[in-house]
Length: 78
Length: 119
Image (cartoon, rainbow over all chains, first blue to last red; front, side):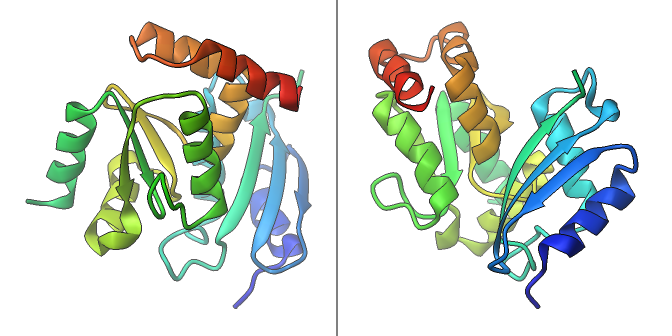
């Protein structure tokens, strides 16, 4: 089942209620997401992106994952 | 040998390792291609491991780093990041610093050129 940008945004919104979130992509396979969240403060990029992957609840996982390509940009608010 | 042992041995025996889809000569995914391309362009000597050639490794590398995607870059046994992180670190110069700190040889002029072209 192809996933939509809207579904990705909903998952991210659940995981990061206070974040500024932008999701782009409409081909069902390739997406780009930017998440700016206060909880990222003091975390390195690996930690930030692990938290994002956790919010996506396995959608990225395995050869059968719904989501093949998600370019991530994560940062704490200025 | 378990996938975990195999991964540990590989990242211990090689200063720079890229777990990727395809090989550095023939990447089979745009994200893998981008990271391999940066390393090739910067003249970094690295070991490439094709996860598509081994299903146990493909899952094993995700468990090893607790990171669900490939490519994955390791320097001196430490997981550095995936495609987005490596791209950001390349453009910010952090990758140069990481290589320098770990005694990894790379072409400084080539690294500067990447930043010039993407500045």
